[in-house]
Amino acid sequence: MRIQQWLDSRLSTRALRPRNAAFVIAAIWMIGVIAFGIIERIADPETFPSIWLAFWWAIQTVTTVGYGDVVPGEASGKAMAAVLMIVGLAFLSVVTATITSVFVARRQAELAEAGKDPVMRRLDEIAARLAALEAALGEGGRESRSPEPPS
Image (cartoon, rainbow, N blue to C red; front, side, top):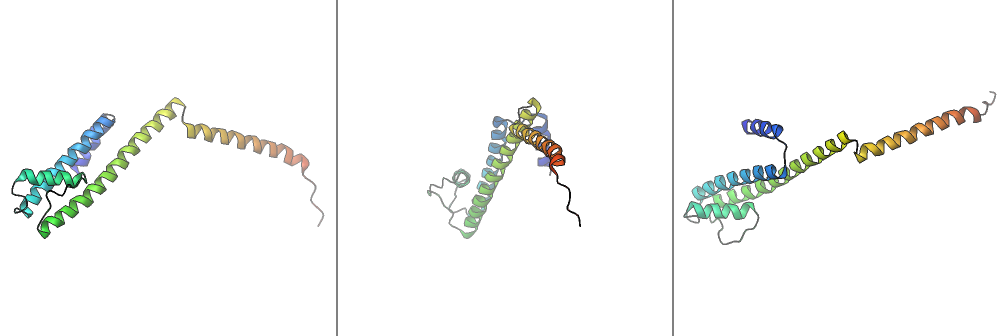
């Protein structure tokens, strides 16, 4: 919760630009690589005799490169690998969608402020055409109405 509040305060005071977004993503990925490297080293010390080898494996796994030169040997290590892969893919998807959404919303706001939003312009055109149709139907409809047949 504190991380989210910190990110909100940092990103609200400064416009989220691709460079800033890339920095945030890289920082979170590095935290994940370090955390999972340490966990994997503890869970499977025979396969990962050094922390650096565990970090190398975590980087390969997070980036989905998976050279195969180092793979977990223990069941606990394989379970951690599965968690890292699933969380990594989910995280990448969510972050990409969120950042894209921020960029699209910002662009739409800029266009709206400048009066150049194509969607709003098209809606205005449709509203004008509808008003013209209603006016034409209102005037012509009264004149061309035939009297109701007697009952």
